[in-house]
Image (cartoon, rainbow, N blue to C red; front, side, top):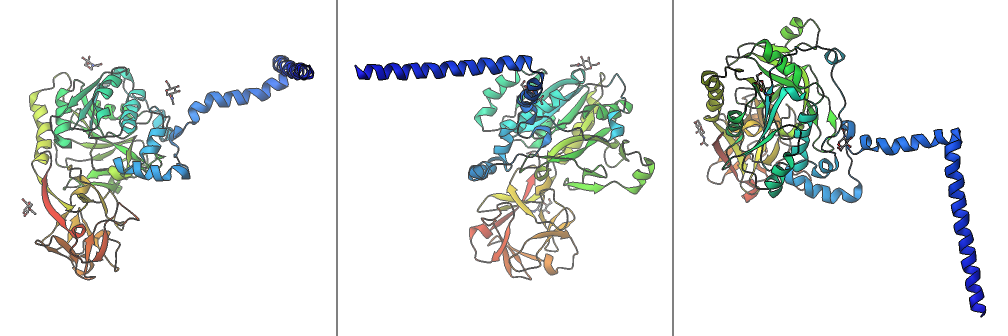
Length: 470
Ligand SMILES: *[C@@H]1O[C@H](CO)[C@@H](O)[C@H](O)[C@H]1NC(C)=O
Ligand SMILES: *[C@@H]1O[C@H](CO)[C@@H](O)[C@H](O)[C@H]1NC(C)=O
Ligand SMILES: *[C@@H]1O[C@H](CO)[C@@H](O)[C@H](O)[C@H]1NC(C)=O
């Protein structure tokens, strides 16, 4: 009997608390409606929830920092594509970016009747998030009437999600996206030619598979081509950190270009061009008849790129509009084929099967090592008759025991740039230090090291001629 009473008391008090709760809830919600002060203080909170969309990881091009607990996993994932995949996957595919154009560029007016373009993107085992972010940025930041189509050329990727999953996904995008598959690994140039051949637009735009276009990227390029259809244009290229995916605006006082060995390099804008532009930095930098029957222009616009993956080229080539003839087409194809039939030497480590790579870095920086991509560019390294290891006009130079291996202007004085290649043992011995070029250490997987010569596999290097596009 007693117990029953206890129960009643417990029930009654619980009921009372429930009623109090309900009353409090009603009271405060009622108050929200009538009390102006409360409403004002609540709104920002609400706004914060709504705008959290814009403040997600990497929005406005901000850096994504991975918490300490996930660092190990992050490092594992980094190896897959040699960039911070974990960070990339956290960022929205349509993330927002700052408008970093010069003020003068924002208000420029371009002709109405610009030619439309097919955007050709070649990929090989690209990460889902970087590839799709490239596509989204093209679609979201290009006027749709200028965008004929996006053509994705798959250079024989092996990853499953790049097959049917990708095909189904792109069907729902607002702009037609075509996927072309190369039957076998063919290299960048062939894949681009295939994409170009399938394109319908009046202009062909080649983009890397992991860039993000910013607002107003396309119009200035197309406007230059409209002025003169034989123009080839190349944008100013900013950098996306491969580590945090932060967007970092580049300088418009340098331009990216290719030297005669097709290595990508940053060059300062020549004084002659500064003078011609009379200080108006919104005007393109112009180059004369370098090697192609086209003029090369650098347009103040921004496409982003990975600092470490500057091996590929991006250009917009006008291939005749409605009167796109075979003649012009062949001229365009000819230049590429000419490039593709030339051999480029690379230096491959026997143990890791990776290649020396200048990573697009400048003089005085460490030489890198990276998965062999077979696309020439930053992996063009030669062992010269002067016994130098050369990339572009830079030579591998070691001034201290145990390295590091730095890229310095070739001085042809032997000294710290003298290397002895033993074609039998496959070793590259630095004569001054009497040490051998070796695979990376655990500390930094991206740079080769100098070690005492031991004859191990990690000190064996294959000097190979690699033919682009084959
Ligand atoms: C990205 O897309 C989502 C879903 O459609 C949308 O809610 C969000 O606002 C978009 N973000 C940007 C920056 O446009
Ligand atoms: C591109 O421009 C050409 C010529 O004006 C036109 O025939 C074609 O339909 C355009 N393509 C798209 C997708 O707008
Ligand atoms: C690479 O090709 C060049 C030019 O054809 C040739 O002189 C050189 O001996 C070749 N090197 C190797 C390692 O095959």
